[in-house]
Image 1 (cartoon, rainbow, N blue to C red):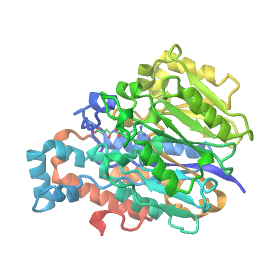
Image 2: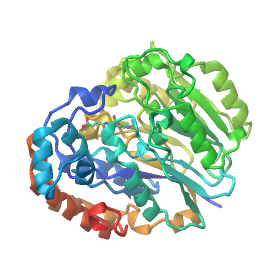
Image 3: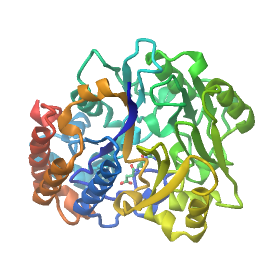
Image 4: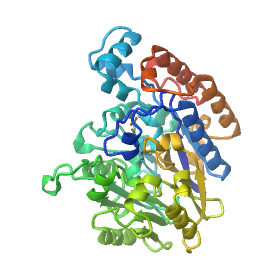
Length: 446
Ligand code: SUG
């Protein structure tokens, strides 16, 4: 049977803005309060989705969330009509208000962790939404994410959905941004590489840090248990706390993998050699494992963070060759574009580089890889996916028209408090649930 990897990209929501919400994320902080363009952001995302579809990949769309989140404001004690709540919160608690307006669900690498059926004990595809407890604005996402994923992957004969982990820092879970699956073929049992930033329970292993890591080992272990993975197909690696302190808030800012390729910076991990040995052993001999290490002399950690060299998608094309999907920031850096051009001729499976402009997302620290959730599927599982969320020429046109109809060209901080924005967003999402045939996944529809 044919197996492949599908990518589900987050559609940028109508309130896309720059609020400086993510301490530890350099781009988010340095663009705080800049004017954003939701329309341009959504269209840049759609262009990337269409481009991957045109490269022959199965590409899907993951719907955005309802923002401003007035339900959370009610939980926090604001009362009255939706308009009253927005006006009062914006005035009395502007930081809270900005957080409940974030369109951060667009970075679907953080939506969930997925294990394909080849790896799981019951041979189903398993989904666990990430709790994203480390940042308030992101902790508002998992419930709706769970509902949207269930509406996309509804068939219980193939898909198994778990609740997000308990909402506590002990089980801080950032989803697939810290998870890579290596395999000789998408349909063969692979090795799931879980990357964590810190140990929740063992404080003796915790040194004081500039930026506390978001994701714990205990969260990784819980997801592996829920998904029915066996020890011989799981490896846990710790992120190097020094690079987290420099702005590598997720592992996908410093490493990316696909099939038999792991592409990473030499400073990415703790205990690198022994862990890579474990990875090689568990990977087995079905195919050669390419460990492509980038060292400081080629690309510094700083350059990797500013260009997002590792927040690229490594994808397998129909002819079996791999391509790197990189942001134009990589092309604009002489060191990084030289590195990538050279890489395609080095005898690894990576043969092509394609650059895309996702600047609106990059300014919040979200590159091409942040924008996508990977789901390896068999042809039969593919047939069971809600077909309305799968990209094709017609859906591309429909969604572009939908963006034109509902999205603003620009949003500044003051605009977020406009009660009209909530109305516009709900009208947009209501129509979107019909386009994508999701049913009433949003709270305002329930
Ligand atoms: O969680 N930025 C996101 C970026 C997520 C990137 N995802 C991956 N690396 N997979 C975050 O830090 C910034 C929002 C703001 O500042 O307005 C933000 O949430």
